[in-house]
Length: 175
Image (cartoon, rainbow, N blue to C red; front, side):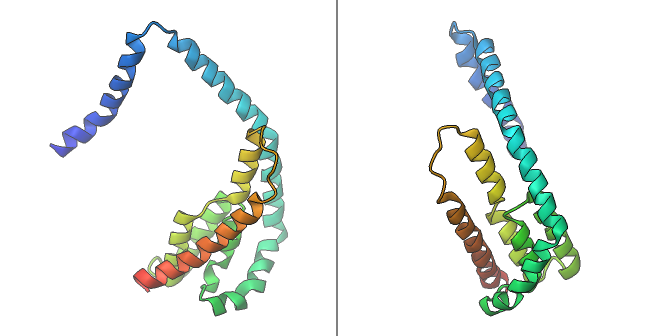
């Protein structure tokens, strides 16, 4: 019974959304075309930002700056109860989704899926996002935004909060 209901949900939603469109005398195809055109214009406007962001992240990763940052933060992290194994992931997560996914896979291979660093990393991957990417896309795609000076510090504070909370949650629930 549940399988039949779940299989019918998406077609039912599509049908229910099509009924109002068919009942009114409006040209919904032209509305769709206009929306697609606007979406393409936004994508073209974001392209230079995405190219610059990709180049900058590649340079940071290739320079070894993340490895240096990890070594500097190893001792303070141990005092705060953050496993040193997740520091490369914590450094890469705000910068790049693909780099943080690669670090996450490397961590799982090195420590095992049931280890405390892997549990902390799993919670962190689910509770944080790539803040540099989000800020650059949002602010380059929204032409009316002018005051952005507080966005990066707040986003960085939230990334640190996610790091500490992830380790605390992993210790509380699984440690």
